[in-house]
Length: 171
Image 1 (cartoon, rainbow, N blue to C red):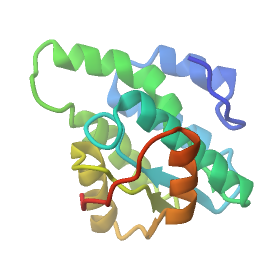
Image 2: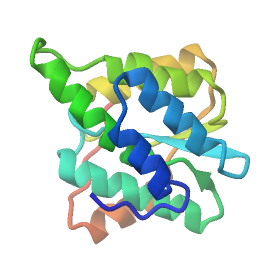
Image 3: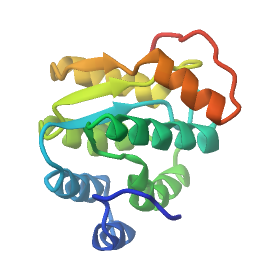
Image 4: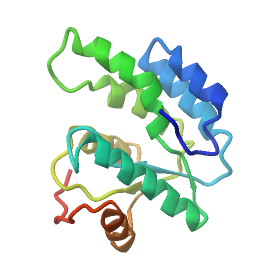
């Protein structure tokens, strides 16, 4: 997978290939975030269990990051974490049937607890998302400010991707 992101260097992506734990992925993510000029923003969005399906959700997230950057926001892109997370999730799924919560409870929680991300933009959700819902709870618990991603920008992205807008459902 090729990522267009100025902060995710080949070295960071290579390090992700050799991660052995959800904590290792968080460590690398925090290393990337430290290279981004402050303030650093994050993006909370459905990826696997909500929204428009994994492929379209990935495109929506990437386009949302690009949109924020075009307006001068310094944004940490979570999508490249998949390089390290996918093998860990596949291993998890061998013995578990439920959602792989270590992604949220270990990787994302450690990123959020670092306080390196100062504000999070929340993408509207087409339907309930287990991961993004739990992210929202953690962000609230840690009192990290969450801003709604501008609806006009979101509609513009959906239109560009030929996706229909549906009213947002909480969580």
